[in-house]
Image 1 (spheres, rainbow, N blue to C red):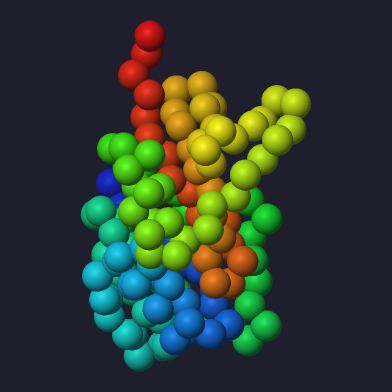
Image 2: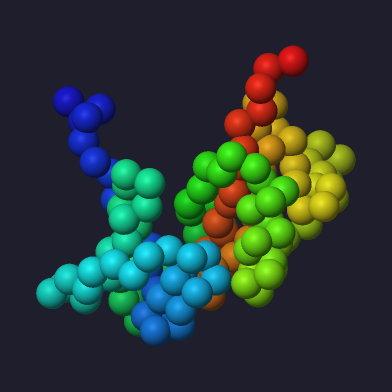
Length: 128
């Protein structure tokens, strides 16, 4: 029933101005639309991302959004030039090298938004 429905990712934010500055200036999203209910909605690659004000906020301890990119190294370089700080991990079965972890058929790199949510870049890896 829902397989042809558009999807909107909803992220709570404590400070809308701060969050919008990050998503627009640091991530380069095109300014979206402020809705009457206070949500600010971006169109992102055929999907929607809605920031909504929530006093006290909440933050996901898991990846809240993952952006598929064609070249993760170039994307990391571009976002770092805009001030985005990437996470690094060094666990026995999960390690990043230059911010990138290879997970089966994809490469991934994580960073946090201004509200503490984990965001991700991922690049599909061609089968060997």
